[in-house]
Image (cartoon, rainbow, N blue to C red; front, top):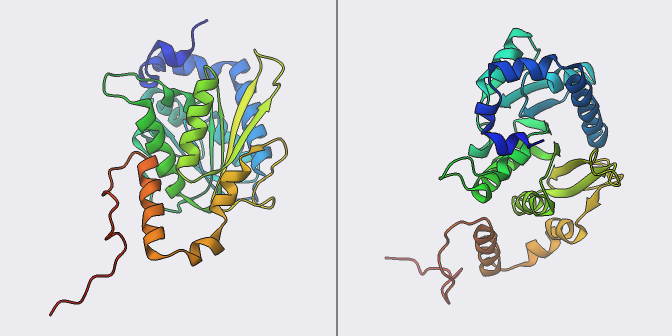
Length: 268
């Protein structure tokens, strides 16, 4: 059976017929609930959090968010047909038609946590001639980081096509500044294997996130928590570090020179 993301873009694949069929399937409902509950278990959230559901579809995961912990949620999805089904079902969350690959369109610090079930693998596809998976992943994770409060948590369940896609997604998340790693359920069962990307926006501690089973890049986390070293760096070192970060994110920055970070003389 072919993967949906290789068949057509999500807004095309999830037509009115497919959206109703997906939502009414008892098997899909069970799997969606199981994965949403697992993601919430990994996040270990306090009750009544403000959560963004990315790729919310017809609101199956959102209903679990409302039932478990009384969370307030906003759902975004690229498929108008899926959102129409969610409206017909009168789900309790707010809904937004948006493409996650174009960025998360919310102001900084809007959410306590983010959840996404079976969605972010679509970012690895080039559905049009102008779509660049690398740029879409970078845009997604950069704006996702900004939309979270510091210490905010993320759980994305996804179905990677291969190890390359796993590395591509992990790399984009870490370049954006996230700390965290992967949880792989049923790793020895290829057919039923489930991947969960568990991230935190800001310094990571064992109190911030349930780390059981998470493969953490300790070197990356250490770089983000070295505040003492940052305070001791010179202005030039600070500028060079920021420029290097922007280069890794694919931004154009000015070339380094002997004048980088040098104070200008006052003009008369």
